[in-house]
Image (cartoon, rainbow, N blue to C red; front, side):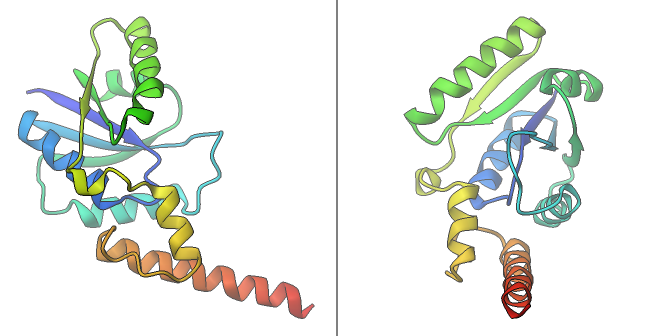
Length: 170
């Protein structure tokens, strides 16, 4: 049974991420979508919230499991018995960083492969940062993310707006 991991911050998961996952499902027996805790990033959603979103979005795919990790991707891949790491490439601009990471991961574990998958071209401009920015300005993001994500973005932004108003009122 060939298992791969698809690590990312998924803050939030987008239709582009889901497209890459669907492509991986066709190639591998098991896909472990794993939320990474990146110390460099300040996420909008907690790890728990991201796990809820991802599990809801992928519940119809029995070959997909969802978890999280804190540490090196290669160590997590070993823990779950993965033969490879899925990485999405939207544009040439993604390639340099992903290429460097793939080479470093190969250095850390020569048996672990990095598999680059491209999403459908309609998702090449899409990333989580754009989604968060649009949502913060109350733009409709429903064409770019699953319904659970739209709902949670609206809730998160309304809570943030209430907190900002409370601070101004003090």
